[in-house]
Every structure is written in structure tokens, then in C-alpha cells.
Image (cartoon, rainbow, N blue to C red):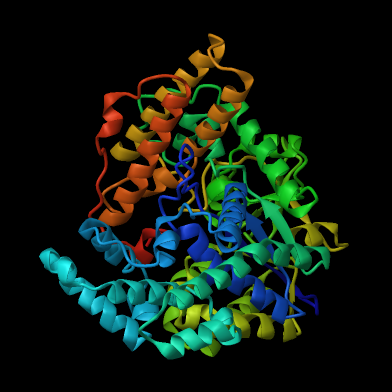
Amino acid sequence: MSGKKLKLVLCWHMHQPEYRDTQSGEFKLPWTYLHVIKDYVDMVAHLEAAPSAKAVVNFAPILLEQIEDYSNQVTGYLHDRIAMKDPLLAALVEPTASADPDKRLKLLRDCKKANRERQIDRYPAFRKLIDMADWILGHQDAIKYVNAQFVSDILVWYHLIWMGETVKLTDNRIKRLIEKGAAFTLHDRIEIVEVIGDLLSKVIYRYKALARKGRIELSVTPYAHPIMPLMLDIASAREAMPEVALPKLPNYPGGEERVCWHLRKGINTFRHFFGFEPRGCWPSEGGVSERTLAILGEFGFHWAASGGNVLHNSLRASDLAGKTSVHQAFRLASASTVCFFRDDGLSDLIGFEYSKWHADDAVADLIQHLENIADYEARPPLVSIIMDGENAWEYFPDNGYHFLSALYRRLGEHPRIELTTFSEYLQGAEAQVQPLPRLVAGSWVYGTFSTWIGDADKNCGWDMLGDVKQAFDNAVQDGRLSDQQQEKARVQLAVCEGSDWFWWFGDYNPGEAVSDFEKQYRLNLTNLYRLLGEEPPGYLALSFTQGSGSPAMGGAMRRGNEL
């Protein structure tokens, strides 16, 4: 490499789907605020603590809105005792636990939703409570003998184990509660909500402050995280999977108009929270096609990114396999937006392997791989490690604290590696962008869309979505909706179009997660029919997919490469 540095982009994608029942405002699942207090605050704290670190942080707009909603709700509770619309948070501050046996059993089930080894077993006091809860859930009549203190303690401990490591190390209120260990009072429970309120109210600003200082680049995803290529052309799934079975729906009605709506709404939401327009876009699930990249260019995006297997499929289709590397920037002749491609192997090492290693050994191994790339590549390489920003860390000791601290420190000190961002790379004098003759549509998972379409249950979900979109189009065309009703319905439609519902459909996923997300999807569709003034179809009252699998990492993450 004749002394030139390898440039490395760490891109962390922060994303949760819409968990609210948009009609009642109630959060049906708590993952947004739990990931705020554990992961989003830890991730920003690591960046704040490492002056030499740089990264790209990508936010899904619908996640930003939910964080703001939670922050407002907690503030409303603390200042005016207005009830919070998340059942778990509301239970945490009830003066005494509900006497309803079904509600108590649900709380016990909810407080088991955590990593057994890294979160539950780490704290003997909580492990004992969970062992008791397991017995009670196996002997449900026993719930009538459970006192309110047991429910109170398990709720407190559940929120303590979800606190980020940087919070546990620095917040004296959390330290005191962990040391206390039992017999928690209402005062203790309200104190936890105060901590949660502090974290929620500041987390977005902390990322914004780093962006202002040039320490990170902030980028965006389309508003509700839709799979844009499939909305533009369902048959694009066949580019990487020629034999795939597709839904009955021949094409998503008005797909291009919907893609543009998500992009406009996403950019406007991003500007609302951060005060400027993003230069880059992580398309939902790294889902790209030639038309998708052209539209991103029309919206002014300088860069996008996808999975390494999308590039490999595209190079094979252009008879260029083996002639160029994933560690470059590329541009299609038909699009102005530059596309970067994820190093799937390195990203998967962090996501799936390094949690089992000692942190120093893991970081040393990653650096060795990067040094090998620097030695091997003919052109100065730009390596893209692109990962989910929240789900990996619960599998690491101490929420990845030691790994991430060592990672930023060692990379910042390394004489041959330069941390950068996608925009900074493109603005630099050394930037090289390779021509890409064609792009085979796909996503970061395997380079295909198999995670979202092609399975019988996923296809059923698409057909349901097509039905409600047709009902929406008819209502608009017939003039049955006022402007205000139309806007509400458009946002609700966006929620239904999110990728996460399809991710979880299919029997290879865990039963409980499939059930949670499938119920939410049917609720989303039902709410949209009601906004349109229509009776929901009877099939929305019936479950259409069940899970019985046990995939790695609980199914919340996938590898970029199939094993």
C-alpha cells in the first residue's frame, strides 16, 4: 500500500418498528425505550469517550418519533402524574401491583424477555426471582399466593438489567439500587423512571452534538423502514432468486409514489430532530435495486449502502467476478448516488462470534483482518462494517463495554487504519469510485430478499398488505376521506409497509417473537381499515403464522452470508 492508510467506516444502524397502537397511543411492546436505556446511550457514550473515533450512525425516523413520545410521556408522568401508555412502565410506578392474576402472569412473562446468560444470570438476586417466576408460570394457580413485593422487585430488576453499562458505571441512583438488591419501594421505582426520563430526553441531542463537532455522520432510512425495491417491483426478488415463489399480488399498487412518500417523510423527520438534511441513506435492510438507487439520487442522497453479496451478485452478472473488491465505492451509470458495500465477513464476526471471545483478543483479531486487507488490496481500500446498532451487545459481557472501548481505542491509535465516514471519504482527495455496469437487486441478508418474501407466510403478509392498499386507494379515489383523514391513513399505511413484520413471519423464527409481531401487524392493518371507514376482513382476526425455530441470537439478527 506504499504507506497509505486503510480507511474504515463503522456504520451503526439504529432501528425499531412502530410499536404503538396508533389509535390508542399505547405501546404494545417495550423494545424502543429498553434499547434506548441499554444500547443507544451506551453507543453514544463510547463515541463521546473516544476523541479519535469516527462512525456513521443511521436512524430510522419512526424510531426517533417513538423516542420523543416516550420522553414526553415520562416527563408528563413525573411532572403531572399523567399515566404512561406503556404497560411495563406504567406497572413500574403503580403504587401497588395489580391484583389481577392474568396481569401478574403477563408481567412475569414480560420480565423474562432478556438474555439469560448475560443479563439475567449476571445478577444472582434477579436470577433467583426469575427461577421463582419460571416455577410460578409452570404452576399458574400459585400466582394468587404471590405478594406485591415480589412483582415490584422483579419489575425493578428487569429495568436494572436493561440499563446500559455506561449508566451502571456512572449513575449513583442505579448503583444504589443494584446494591440494595431487594425490597424495592415506590420511591425506588419512581427513581428508575427518573433515570429513564433523563436518558430518553438527552439521547438524540447527544448524537446531534457529536455530528455538529464532525465526530460522527448521521444518516437516515426511509420513514417506516419499507423494503423499497419490492415496493417498486415485487418481481425484483427474482433477480437474485430466479425460482422464488412470489405472492399472488402481481405488484404493489402505487409503489413508486409510496417509496417517494417514505423518503420525503423520512428526510423531513430527520431534519426536525437534527436540524439539517442527511447526505447518506442506509436503505431499509440494505435493500437496493437499480431503480431504488436512481430514486435516492433524485432525492439528493450522495451515498447509500448495501450488503457485500449484492455486489458479488452484481459483479457475477457483469462478468467481473474476482476482478474488483468489496472494499471500494461504486456508482451505476444510471444513478448519481455512490453505493458502498458491507464487508459481510467482518460485520458477522462482530455480530455473531466476538461475543464469545475476550475483548482484547476479539479486537486484535479484527485488526489483523484489516491489516491483511491493507496488505492484499491493489487499490487503497475503504472497508465498510455495517451493523445493527442495538441487538448484538446483549450477547457480549457487560453489554459490549470492554469490546467497544478497546475497539475505538485500538483503531484510533493504529498507524495504518483511519476511521472515517462515507461522506468524508467521498469529499477526500483520495476518493475513488468504481463504475458498476449493473446492480442485481437484493439486501444485506444473503444478497437476496428471502428474509421478507418467498416463504408462504411472508407472501400471505404481502397479499394482506396489497388488499389494504387497494382499499386505501379506493377510499382516496372516491373522495371518502378529508385531507386530515387521508394524512392519518397515509401514516398508518406506512406503518403497515415496514419491513420488520415480514422479517418475523415464518416457522424458522421463535414462537413468542413471531406471535408478538404477527399480532402487531394484524392490528396495524385493522387500524388502517377502520381509518378508511371500512370493516376489516375476517382473516385479520386469525393468526396466519407461527414460529417454532431457535435461530442464532433469537432471530433478531441475521448473518450476511448463509452458513
